[in-house]
Length: 481
Image (cartoon, rainbow, N blue to C red):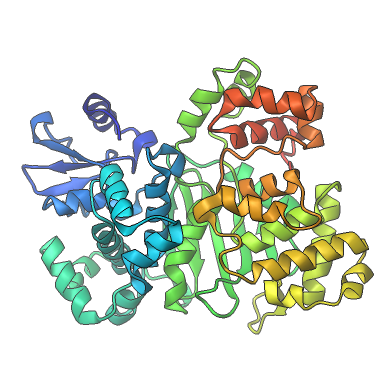
């Protein structure tokens, strides 16, 4: 949370770098806003600051219909004083309290429910249950404004168990009916799909993200054209592969997908925010890394670089194993062969033929099938072992990225480089640092041991430092590991 002086300055300047980092309640109107709200700037004596939308609503404020707090970026885990609270909120936003109790969530995170409740209250100014309710309401408000879904579908997509409960809580909290919000609805999405805008804190490097994706796009699974990205994707909540498309722009991106299944929408939004690093204050990351004269020129040349990751954690892990010690282009070819041989065919005529293989499908693949695609016997065995382990949903659990990396290291054929890379690209560990990477060693002229020692000054953003060094080598095409 910013100091009051910093928050006042951010509101006066309508500073996008702090969008979503706090909210301001205006006592003269009873409304809470983002710091970038285009409405008339409230007087200082009428401002109250809150660490989260839930805290603002808990104090009796309702969301602004102009700046729409539901569109604000979330908080990056590195910005939270308590990583436990950040991990809990990430799970809550994906719907963790829709289908399990607070005790169940606490058990998954390895703490008592009392400790979890206290940590979340301290960092975000609201209880986990209040945060869950606010997130459901804000998502419902977004769907009311931005989609043509019926009220019942909106209620269930937002995590409510009944339409009656949705209507009652909406009226109670916002002092208006859902139909009143729907009256302000924008243009209907063609084809009956869902289109949601997701903002990036401080702006988005659309061309950089697209360059990364285009260099790795798997034929039949992904498609890149201009600043548009389409792909097949499997989420546990969906039960079947879905098709998602993205339009990149300077402020963030627009996600488009079919409205079914509704249960997949909330986790998909969370996955997209992590995959494209939308919630990180990259200006703060740049300011920290720029203190090192060795990285200062890179940051001045390309400010605001984000850490593009992946929408499917298992997919990124497989890509990392296949990509060991070969080029990006060669890895793309090999991954494409695996998808063509093992991936599930798509039933709809979308121009994309297959979904990435599931852990179960790859685990059951005979080794000779994989070696017949060009993989070595050892690499094929590593992939099958990874797939067998990943059938457990908790194996690649981002709630504790360090523990997940330790589990990866225990598998035959996965070493520190691969585990760190998966931590960085798939698990959201922005401090993961693959010191054994030959490119990083080459560009710095340091051995692995020397590089690890030098990287201490980049904590807690060592992953961003690695990204900067990779991009230095890859310019001008910006294709990096």
